[in-house]
Image (cartoon, rainbow, N blue to C red; front, side):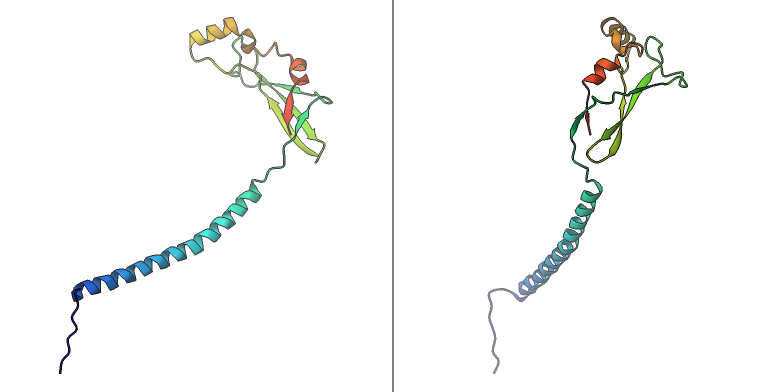
Length: 150
């Protein structure tokens, strides 16, 4: 006696469903494995990054006790000239943070950048003569009211 089982779904479609189900379980396994490896790596990298880039808290300090700025002239650089042919210069100052004995340098460049055409240079010469020279710098006025981020 033979028995037959009848089904409304052909046998070829039953095979496809089982195959696709196995495919999804493999995808889910790969995703879980990926997340289990990536999430701890991201946490570790974040902790390393935070330790390397941890900056001390900033406090605003006035330079009132020591206004000892030193002017450095760039005499050895013949191309470093202002528009009036004065020697280019910058100012440097060692600052001390009394809270934790850290030393930092303040470097100040006084100037008006550069001109990009003859017209812009002439405009600057007429309307901003203090930006074309390094001779007229008044360090007492500037550094009396200068705030430094320490």
